[in-house]
Length: 267
Length: 260
Image 1 (cartoon, rainbow over the protein chains, first blue to last red):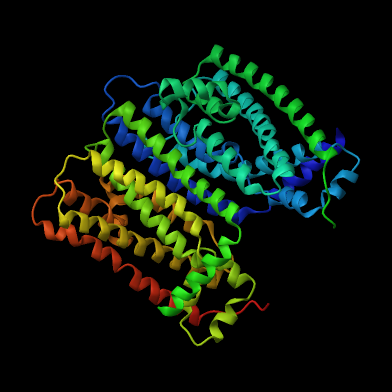
Image 2 (cartoon, one colour):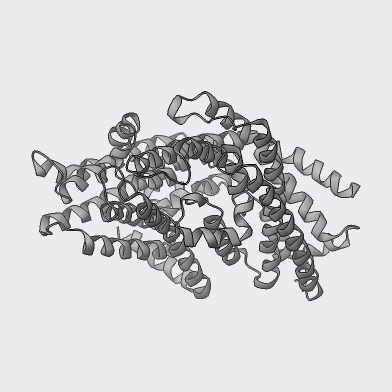
């Protein structure tokens, strides 16, 4: 376990070096957030009856989504593992005295966490002092905030467990483009990146609830904004843990399977 | 111009060598905007209207902007990935050839997989046109073509500007995405739903408004006053490319090789 922790720390420090890149990202995210809020504002002008999520909650939802973007997207800046697999350097990884799954898992979590740490604080800071209609609101109570932190962190674990499947699939296809695309389009759609989950039509919402993708972003953000209250959030945590266990076990089995028939192409 | 088509045909041939990959990537390019369009549909199903625009009107706007974006991304890809040319010092080679740098960089890369995105936009366009209850005549069709062409000019201009920045920064910068991807996302809705300052910036500085909002008013018969101005506003948008080319020339003069 200690080995994984130190891999995690190393990667975290490494990721924190890219400050300028993160700043540029922050500017982009801001623009995006503003545009989205304006679009939804225009939509809400015609909202006759009560909507499943209020505009105020949606504003928080959008800012959180921008701040924790690296917790939403399924693939985050890691060509490294791909080139390991396709380039044959995977053989070095296999020599290491720790399991490959744990090694990559720790690495990926650290990468996302460092990305989020760099980006979230400036975005959130400014989002709290914006003029009224764009301002991010506080969570309804301290319990909601605690639940938000728990679901967010658990969600990160789930998300990384999902993204491991992308890497595993590259062992079979040898080209990341296809799997990234399928995972990217479907995963991010059902995670509520294109359209917030509560605004989906009910049949689509039912599908989204059956899939694990929304657990990483939609669930914590809605817990924060108060759209999902205490008991439902607790149920969400149970779901997260269940999915996490299932995904990690399946991922380990799948990785063992593909490693058995791995072909190292020279080197 | 002949040289440009020569570049084009060479690159088509080279990409067709990997036909499976080409087809898959094109499908991907089809799927991405498709999911955005699906989201648009669901939002309209829930809310009915976006300010005073209905679904098919927005779909028209959406398809035209995505069409121009995909075409300009296909053709101006060389500028989009220009930073790699500068980083590796390969721009030196471009400089010693007796042709304009603009043309050479433009012809250095084409991304034909964008045809998937284009196809998707064309489908959306036909859905929108078939369902809109406006009278169609030659001038309106002409306006749509003008809008698309003008959009291509604007997006290309932005790609060129972003590429010019590489002369100073060496690295490609993510901020430029605000105006390319961000511009696309933003201009897929009629511009008047945004706040005044956004609308102004994107009409007078970067003339998306001339491609999107003003001519749309004409096509959908919402305008008041002279229709010729509305119709011709995309022409103003096209002018955007001219300062971009000047900035590019200025940038080329300031180019310092990174060595290779």
